Every structure is written in structure tokens, then in C-alpha cells.
Image 1 (cartoon, rainbow, N blue to C red):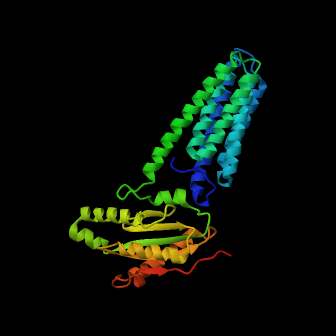
Image 2: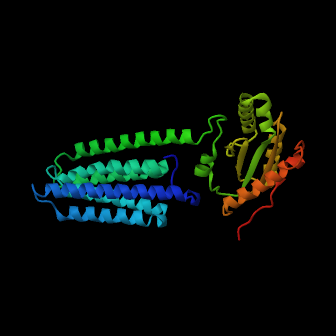
Image 3: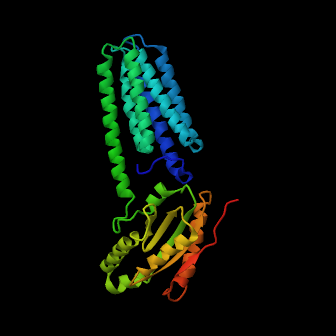
Length: 329
């Protein structure tokens, strides 16, 4: 996974994926539990509450799968918390001779899920809940003979699981969010991490002019070098909170949080000045977080191609076109 659930409406597909995986986790855990109960019931007395809990989790998983398009991020947090509470309760009721003690492995499943789909700060809350739930279960359970040792083992396993899952997710995110040629963020990074800005922001689509001609006459190595050089020089013209991403080919996207029209235009003019030997065309606007981003991108794209339609963009006045600010009513 390379994205985190943060309530972003532009991540609906990822939310559907997260809901699907949570439902599969719940269904798998409940089936394993029911099979364990069925196999063990011939050898010893099994509390009916174990089967009832497993059946409830199975119902929850099926419902999540069927209604996944109605699921919201907060519902996933609630379900994970419920799972932690149920696992802790089963451990509290069990003892060392009870197969129910094996449900402790589900703590690891919860941690893996949390650190795979949720921002680290939120996943840490679920890890803390797991540690607390295990401490209460092992500390107060009548059938637990070595509560401290059991808690240390489960806690250590959960922490190690969290650390390695977070490392893997972070490495995958770095690879999938970086353009390998320029080192800039790529389109996926913008879609996953930048939206939605939390204040008025500036947005610009930038396209290099005559880049194909450069590739055809001097070769792709020269074209690649030009892209890398421009990316390095353009980054130096931006503020620390701005995002310049390679949108595709010789097209770039600039996002400037908390910026005015004049500030954005000034930055684009500076980018134009360091664009030699090429020139650039750009369409830009400012908007509020409530403005539909697909509408903003479409408007900037139209302005960009109006600029490119002009014979030679050798001046900033013809190369950079402002789109009227799009308001949401």
C-alpha cells in the first residue's frame, strides 16, 4: 500500500480497497475461529460466547464487504477498535488449556492492517489500544498463569510487526510517489497526499514548448538531462510547502497552498525565466478547498493549450494564462 486513509474524497477507490481488506480480515478470522472451536469441541468444553463472538465478526465482515461503498473512514477505525476489544475479552475468558488463547495472533492482524492503510499517527493509536487490551486481558484473566510474560511476548510481537509494516509501506510509498528521472513527486503522489489543501491554494499546469523537437534533434539523453536540470532549478524557486510534480511527459503540476493569484503568477514568471533553452506554457488559477479539483484541472488544461496554440511563447504575457477563479456555491 502506498496511500493512507485520511478522509480525502478523492481516495474513494482506496477506501473501497481498505474496506474490502478489512472485511476479508474479519471473515478470515471468524472462519479460523469457528473451525478451531468445531475441532476442539470434541475434546473439551468450549464456551458458547466464543462461537457467538466469531459469528458476530463474520456478520460484520460480510456486511462490510456488501456495503463497502457506504463505509467511511471512521467506521474502519471503530471496527478495528471493536476487534481489539473482542480479542482482549476472549483472552480474558480463556486459560492456557483453552484453544481461545490462540486469538492473540489476531492482534498482529489488526496492527498490520492499521499500519498498511492508516496514517502512522492513527495506526499508533490502534497499537496502543492493542497493548492496553492485552495488558488488561492478561492482567485480570483468571486462567492466565504468567500475565507479565504473556503480555511482554504479545506486546513485543505487535511492536515488531508494526515497525516492519511501517518500514515496508514507507519504502513502497517513496518508490511509487517519486518520478525516477527528475526526483520530483509524481502524479500518484499528488493524488494520494496533496489533496485536498486546507486553505486557499494556487494550481498551475505547466508544459514545455518544443520539447519534442529537442528530443528529435539532440536525442532523448539531452531531453532527459533538460528535464532533470529544469526540475532542480525550478525547485529552488519554490517555497518549502509548495509541490511541483511531474504530471506526465514534459508536463508539470504546481500546487501552492496559502497563495494569492499574484504570488502564483510571480512564481510562474520566475520558472519561465530559467526555462532556457526551451520556453513554457502555463494555465493557472486559485481556489478554495471546496472547489472540485477535476474542474480546476480541466480549466487549467484549457488555458494551457490556449497558450500553446500561440506561435511562439517567448514572452511571459503570452505564455502564462490565468483562469478566472472558480468558486463553489
